[in-house]
Image (cartoon, rainbow, N blue to C red; front, side, top):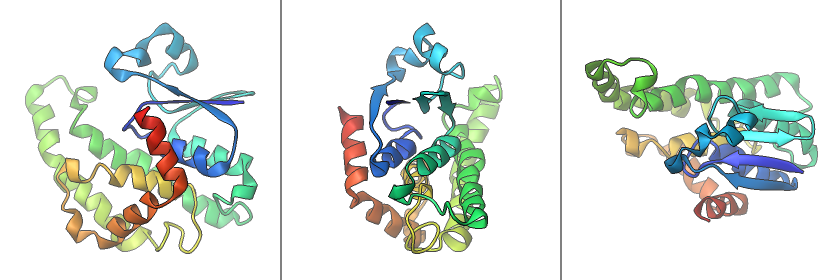
Length: 206
């Protein structure tokens, strides 16, 4: 049995959706950030990084969305959540997911967790002020060059789609004018229609 550790409204939503899509048996465990459970000894024994998501398997714990998403796709091949039979396309999907992880998510974090990079309060405010610009630039690149449509990889749904859905869900809060990103808005709306997405969102609520 897989055990998935998540916090509502976090980037862990991507892997939670993928688990729902996969049909794999798993237990979802909420990590309450408001109570600092991510820093508790029990959770740090699972994930010393003190962050979500984390996926406990029979071989050990996997952290980081790109790794968890790839694992889910490979462990549940019948769900067809990745182009497993095409090494180049699989690598291209991984490149997309890693861009979301290493660049888009980091730009978003500059607006909320500037303390990770500097103790200078003025510098933190400057980073926060830059977020609408950097997030718009990132999402414009995805809109124009990376989102093939109707899904990230073209006609086939993959684990890249819940990841994009999750991070695009932060756009308006980051000051991005989503009216200028029609392909991304359409992708987001299409994702909301998927039963697996609806189940995942319901699990976040309670």
